[in-house]
Image 1 (cartoon, one colour):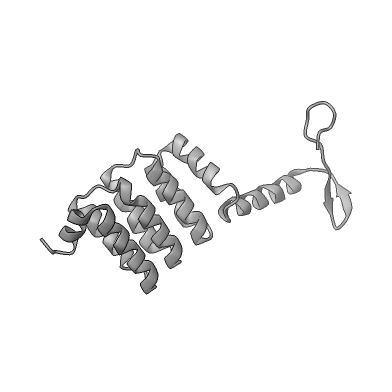
Image 2 (image 1 turned 120 degrees about the vertical axis):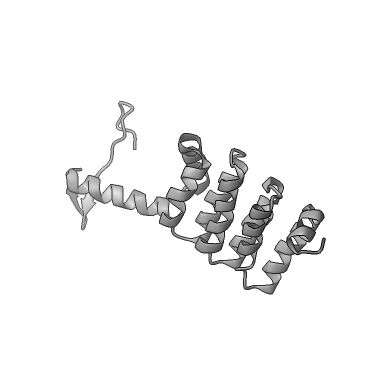
Length: 164
């Protein structure tokens, strides 16, 4: 609410009774904001800001385990991949985090499919990619990832599956 002078104005109530916005209120607000962020509030925007400030690798390692929900984790990891400043080690970390931290087969498969264009084709990266794909239990989602790999990079997929 605008207080008329360009300042934010509002009221703080507990059980319907107005209270001053004191240290207790500030602590409550900080807790609620932290919880909202952990649950995905403005996830894409926040992920981009973190990546700009701290870099994609730092953002991955520090933030992903603290987030709630597979969708939110996928968004952060996708933004890291999109940032295009990931080296092979950090990209492997994306795949390892996906395998460890994302339990939803859909969210994991969606991340892996979207990461295909950014994937280096060195053996360690491919191993990490296929290890993450191997944690997908749904036949449909697993097949979706494998089909996308074959379409995007048949030579790398054949190497990874020891067909060459």
